[in-house]
Image (cartoon, rainbow, N blue to C red):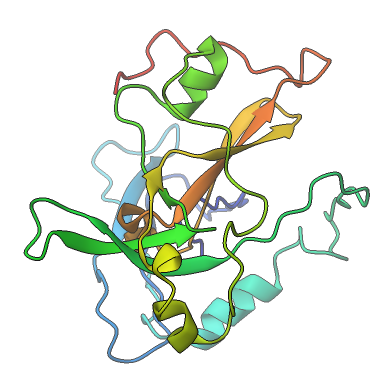
Length: 230
């Protein structure tokens, strides 16, 4: 039960050495919502497994099996109060208020010259194409992103009244940019986005560029030599 960008550490035990599928499929709690029903699979082969052994495919839960999904989430041991919980720092040095909005942006190839664009704080995120955010941060390359993502919405409005927001042209017209928020420190780049990756092409995202810290462990290492190019 992971969303895009989320990872889970799992300890697996088997009764005998062999080949096994590691499989995942979608969970959909609402009827009538289209989704990709394809199961993604990988194969785990243990040392000493017979080369002729066929992988064993697990019995997958139904797409709408809410009890199984609930059981998974409620038994995660890293949750607050769990046996492997790591308390988070209580001292807060950055304060942000982020709104999510749907507007329109220019699109010369579209039927009406515009297209829907999702935004955070009225900025619709554009993925860089020539260099990754992490590489641009490490090599200090300018022109890939701008560190001006606002801490609060640039235009204050009624955050719960749709009819008022539609009349506000500054909210309806969504600028596109690769604006990020710069933080201290842990030397990395984190993408903040909706848990549905289908919203990423609409621009519903931003990034946190976390600067290097004072130690080697908190400093970004160089990219590996075999890093694929954009």
